[in-house]
Length: 185
Image (cartoon, rainbow, N blue to C red):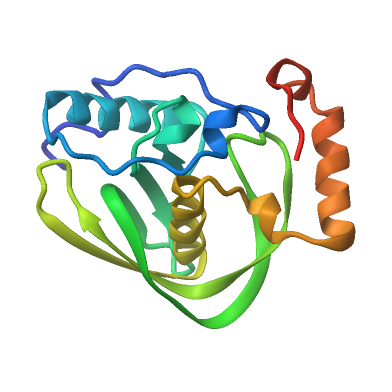
């Protein structure tokens, strides 16, 4: 049995931002204060991600325009990857390009085949400012790239074109959450 606190167990679930919220399209600012407020934000992010049944969450998805994301994501070998990254930078994305189903907590219930590299390396720091380097393959690499896109103001639908993009946008218009969020591309 593991001893310690489960990430998010002391956090509060915050409201999710949906497509149409301008904060999802704005690049996030670098974190400069490594303090209790940052630690609380990360706890809240875990709590929110788990409540929404996600595998990753960027701070701007809960309305905080800072470069932070959390994850609890398996790779293709079903190894669990759990952590957070502050001020992440996509240091490498390479290998074969794989098209796989991708969804987003800010577009609930919608997914599409999206091309991503099969390997990704993220460099950043922890909530205490310690350097961290995270390497992922397969589904975990997809998660790392997806969350970095969020922090730059991007969404997975930006990587779609043609019929795939048309179908996602049609599904967005029909989604129950879209009207209240003012969703649009």
